[in-house]
Image (cartoon, rainbow, N blue to C red; front, top):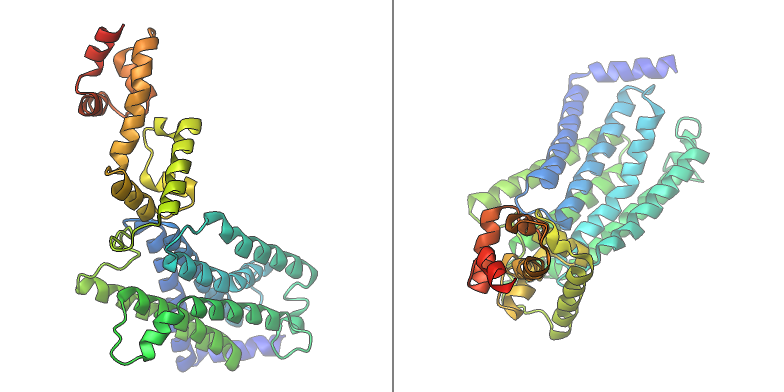
Length: 364
């Protein structure tokens, strides 16, 4: 062990390897930066953005684990286990992001648990039975009984599944005269980038260095792609609610289902009474993308989300103004979900043509 540690120390002192270590670490931390960006700073956040954020996070954690384990073999075993779990989650999060981004129909949000929970549980059990430091030979790809082989097989299966989801984009890439959309460019870059990282981990003895450096190049390329989209003032699909499907109307039976579930949700749960309720909250409850709910209301009811929800609130306020003699008019507005007196009066007058106070006076 001392000789191995000395060898590692000497390697680390080599300027060439120091440079590779630097690029590996920078790549990983750029990934962390993008993870935070997609999770918290994208203007219109949705499930796809969260899956993308998670993908950037697990790639970064995997690279950080590799880099620091190479230079510090005595690193905490817990950190190693976290890195291995992250490695097992790269494929699932890639697939979930690609699937969620390209799905134009109802993609139920809870389905992601079927990909993530079993993976995490399996890794916890395996790592409990065969801890990395005690059974390191079992984790090496060269071993006969290799947990590593299983891990990377699972990863490549998800990469292939992701490629199948965007097979039309790949077909457009090789077809002459066929122009790729910004979304197709982005998804192809993402899938190919993750595939390159997988290849690097499976074909080199300098796993920590090369995969880390490639990750840096991959992450840096994604950042350049973001800059390019913004430079030419395009609207990447992860920056805005996906409302660019006006020519793709929602099927009639699907509209009926959405409106029926929406009505049930409001009537039974009274969600409209929450003053801070947002379109994304309701879409999440219905397990549909926000843009689909917005399109459904606009195309089929001719009204936006705020008008739709205010109609429910005003209807409830009507009942309370007639029957409730304990609350003030303003208090009733708050009970019905309005955040202020002014918004209550404005919405009530727009819908009923009179003020709440006048309505109460005329009906009690």
